[in-house]
Every structure is written in C-alpha cells, then in structure tokens.
Image (cartoon, rainbow, N blue to C red; front, top):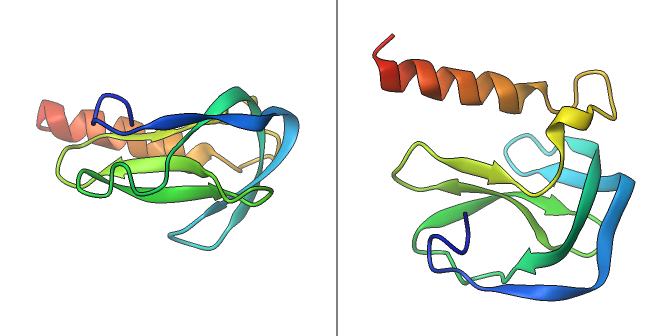
Length: 106
C-alpha cells in the first residue's frame, strides 16, 4: 500500500521473522504479538500526505500498519490470520468486513 501511495521502503538490517514480533496499535495502545515474515519496511514520513501510521513494531520502531486518510483502505505488515493470541487481530477482519458492507451500501 505504501508503494502504491508513492511511499518509500528500505531493507531491514534484520528482517522480521517468526511469531513473536510485538506490535503496538496506536489507536488503543494495545500490544499484539504478531507473526511476520518480511525484510523491508516503510520509510517513516514518506507517505504522511496520504496515510497515517496505525501500528508500530516495538523492537525497532518501524511502521507495521497504515490507514489511508481519505479512502477506505488500510493495511498491516504482518499476518493477522496467524492469530498468535486468541483475539489479537480479530478487529482487523471485523473492520475489513464492515468497510466492504459500507461500500455495498448495507
């Protein structure tokens, strides 16, 4: 999503691998233990005009989630379907289905 919005990425010195990456959700301050497998991150500040940062990796302070400022689009750079905790990422799926229902006019 960041690249599609004209943002920049960079190669991480140590990629985010495994099911033990702590990520904080800015909206609530809640920390989720996530499953990740990526070697690049979004350059902070490169998409400020288009999106806001919603999640941050607590190990290295890299961006893990974005939300478009005007369009119904958001993304995370981890695997919410892995469900490391019983309810950690459920809200992402609920939010996605709510956005789809709204677009259909429901």
